[in-house]
Length: 114
Image (cartoon, rainbow, N blue to C red; front, side, top):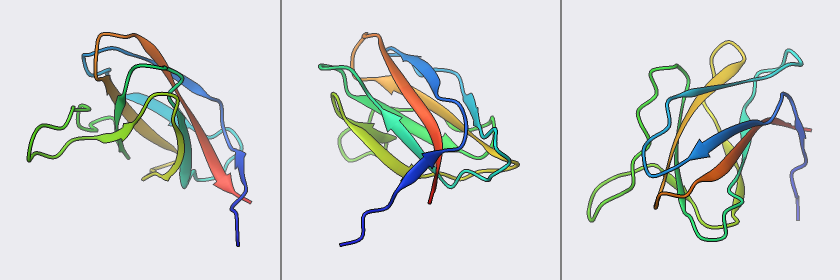
């Protein structure tokens, strides 16, 4: 079985998440590569974090899904995931909201497959 290996391509960015959508935060590489993936880590043991990713600062505000409605992708308590991300000029933008007041510190690291 093939297990992908990733390496960081820029600094880890912290986003303080509460029950209000955080303003868009830019995540950039520092090694001249185009980020095609990002590592998202939710360290909270109780809070679910909903995340929206976009290629510009105009990325939509993160939302908590409602019954029958769409929302942002979810990171459960203590969950981490590597996800593909859209990018433009070596960066992408992230917004996040929590399922409760929190706070928790979502971390986002641009990574590339080796």
